[in-house]
Image (cartoon, rainbow, N blue to C red; front, side, top):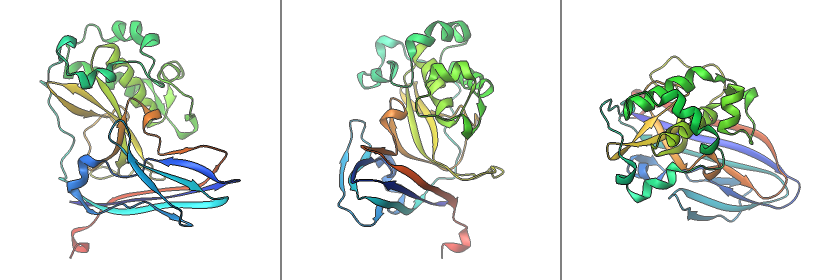
Length: 273
């Protein structure tokens, strides 16, 4: 299948404001890109691109005083298959993990392993290690948290989410990631596009989505505690230790978000001729 993706984000800045933007499709999907999602701005401003320490494609701009519109449209080829499933995938002993996975065992800005370690072992210490343990964590988080955009705030951590029992998709991911790390399973935060493909459309505006990967059986697998079912059409934009590493827009100065629109939809076959 082919999926059309894109966004339009408008900020108002009272003064020239430097920004870092992490809005492009991840390099791991480059072979699937049919129409590149080039970042455009209105008014046009100089743009400098670079790769961060996690391999994400980032852009630097200085937004002028007044409104600036950030927008892109792209087309991506997708297999149309749901997320890979491997119920027999084993947990790798900590001493045998590859060095590059170890950073995803540590506490981070939104994932306080030190505060949740005892609770993680209390909740999941008797579960079978490996895939079944990660699924048990997802089941718990999925049932523990009530979803609502009114519960979102930029300072909310896994510890806050655990105690408040409410949040948005990134909060589900942060709590599940923290529990996995407490159980010695490497887990990394992911963000990207996830449309209502193969499911009943969800009411409300489209948004970017947050999920996570875990390292089991010698490779990374995708899990999604918010939806807690395998999904079709997941298109990765960026990944890191938690949401602090993959913020879509980081502004270095005052700014007001005026509008935010995300598009991700399957292109009907009769439109591809």
